Structures are given as structure tokens and as C-alpha cells.
Length: 300
Ligand code: HSE
Image 1: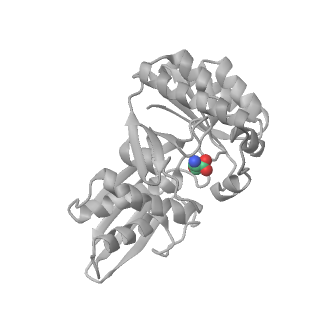
Image 2: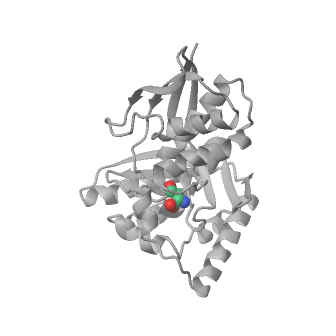
């Protein structure tokens, strides 16, 4: 009998919180099916939705790398499993695509083994999948995909990660323009040095966003969705970035920025109606420039 696991798309960074903030949306998400087989070895029998682009070798694909790490950690040898991955989001989209596969993979394997580890304990394994896919073991996609909600990573070493309460009426609009950005490249172009002035501005916004979310202060959330460090560098990779952002805010959103490493852009809004009108306006700006896009509106 086979086990199925779903892991949702995520928005990482959330404007000011590079590598430390992320939240899960309801859909889309990847699905992994796994079943035991008699011969030893974890094998990928099918991947749908990737146009044949992801590696089929279990040691190279995030969905199975996480399983191999988990089996090794538990000291289980010669275990046999067949894995099917249904990719329900584009690669290189900034929607946490590789993270969703890694999380669905590790959750499915853990369940097949009778759930020896808790969700929290699965996190380091999911991060190994992210490392293989994007070259860095950041947790701001795998964390929320695994734990749900809005996640803060206070520290990577040691790992200190937790969720914070957010307002009930907070909606996310995610607009994916039909272009691709590789996370490795989008990390490579970042500068390693940050000025004191920008550090102060970013810390103020990080504090403001956490306080705004926890106090359900929508104006404060909007004022804090400002990124003076990463967005100015990465936004040059996204055509119409400024226009799309302005359109979101002019049409009901509290704030708008790059989702993860892009090219998807996300907006946060109070209420579903605002999230939808912001999204329509964002898509229109891309369309005006001849760029097709898809939109997802979701409660957080
Ligand atoms: N925090 C990561 C980055 C997320 O921005 O590179 C990648 O999706």
C-alpha cells in the first residue's frame, strides 16, 4: 500500500527577512507517492509536471536525497522504496518548488517508516534537499512548507525556528510571470557586505513586520514590507518589477515584494477581495509588457 504526502508552495524572505522569514500558502503544492518494494534501494519511478527536467537519479533529486539522509540517520540499510513525484508548480519560480518536493519526500518516507521522527525533527533532512537543489541549506521555504503558517528562523547554527501568530484576515497574492530564475544565480549576485545604514533600516522593518503580524496591525505590516538590501539587487532580474509592485499597492495590497529568489512576486492584503484586486492589477502590468503570468490567492 502506498502513502501520499502533500507539501505546499511557500513565500520566502517576505520582503525584509532574507533567509529568516517564510510562510506557506494553501495551494499549489507537490505530491509524493511512496511504496515499499522488495529489492533494496530508493528509486524514482515517475515524475510528472517537470517536462522531463528534474534528475531521475535518486541521489541527485531533492525528493529522494532527503529520504536517503533520513534512512542513513535511522541506521536503516537495504530499504527498498518506489517514489512518484507530482510537480505542481514551475521550477525556478520563487514559489519554493524544490522545498515542496523535499518536504513531501521526507514526510512520505517518515510515514512509510511509521513516523519515527516529529515534523520539527524532519527539518534538517528537508534542508539537505534544498542544498542539493539550490546550493544552500536555507530553511525559509522548507520550514513553512513542513510546519505551516508564518515561520521565523532566529538562528541557523544552532537551528532555532518557530512559527508566529498572524491575523486571520491576511491573504497572499502570488503572481508568477512566465520567466525562470535560478536560485543559485539569484544568490550569487548578492553583495556580501551591508552598510550600517541599511542594516538599521532592515532591522527596523524586521521588528515592525513581526510586531505588525502578532498585533494584527495591518498598517504596520504594510509599512514594514520594505527591503533595502536584497530587493534593489534582485529586482533588476524581473521585468516590470516597479510597475507591478506599485499596481499591487494602488489596488488594495498592504505591500508587495519578490517571492523567494523570484521571479514570482507576492503581495499581502487585508481580506480576500483586496488580494484579488491587487493580483488582477499585477497580472495586467505583466500583460502590458507581453509577459504571461499565473496567479494564486490564498489565506495564510
Ligand atoms: N531565502 C532564499 C533566497 C529563498 O532568497 O535565496 C530561495 O527561494
